[in-house]
Length: 311
Image (cartoon, rainbow, N blue to C red; front, side):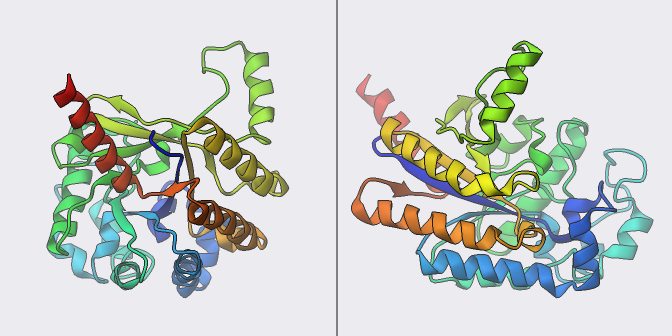
């Protein structure tokens, strides 16, 4: 990296993020007040504008549709991840709900004075690690086609639940980069005691990361989720430590969160603002570069091209 980089990605799902978790507390809050999901998105947009920080908004494709519009796009014969997963009868029940369509939020992102990136977070939020190739291909294709209807194509992708699979489905649609799993201190194959110890340390330390070139596409791992319902008091110190390490080692610090997380943690917005103020200061001092996932991929591809030419 020519300079340390900060990236923030936001998974915009509304109701789609809870298809497999119908009892989730956040979904109950959204069902009780469908507007609160839009409210937290506005809070994040205002916060990012305050510090002039662009984010990669990973948007579930169906949210680009108006309420009830999906029946013109969705077929009864869509391949299913498994029986009962967003089948036609279930889809007809939810497609007119404001929790499953949000072109108004997308328009607000596009209208922001900050140039945010809008990436793709699949179409129905199907876990790619469990679905077949046909379902994965359609999840990407439907989302990309809808975004092109809006006048742009996605450069970045976030796998639903961070369950990575069928990477080749991305390459055929022009996706240049995806978010990988959060960096860990040790490998999954390490002994159990070592993994437990590293997991405990991971609650105190967030790791800088480097982009990885995998199967002709970039992967940028996460450094940390900026939400922790178990030890929330460690979030801010974890992020500060990670950012300092990133600047010292000239790597990337990549945080991510779901907007609905703000509904479950009263102090989360203040912690995020405190941290983004530090990021903004480091950027203004010239010691840190703030980029979206798509910006990072473009920079990496340019450098990779220059390297190939020089060879």
